[in-house]
Image (cartoon, rainbow, N blue to C red; front, side):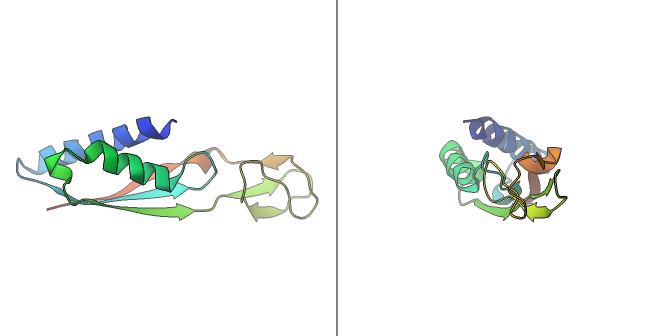
Length: 116
């Protein structure tokens, strides 16, 4: 489960921002944008974040907001552009599995860190 490493990195970034802001800072909101591709689950990220930060005072009451977006892919055979709904994309127009999948399809972006 590579989500664990991702969540730990997010926590490290937020903790660093918190320490830069001041000794008594706490985290109100953490916002993420997750490209839904079947490889990373927003629910898993949220669960791990809550588990890892449970005993960290600066994260008490923190809300994690996750915006999940569907990736667009393109069929190399018929050039149909469509939203990827499954881990193994299948062109809805011609049935081909020869699909162009952009590199950013597995992106997780930290969009918001709101401190108290």
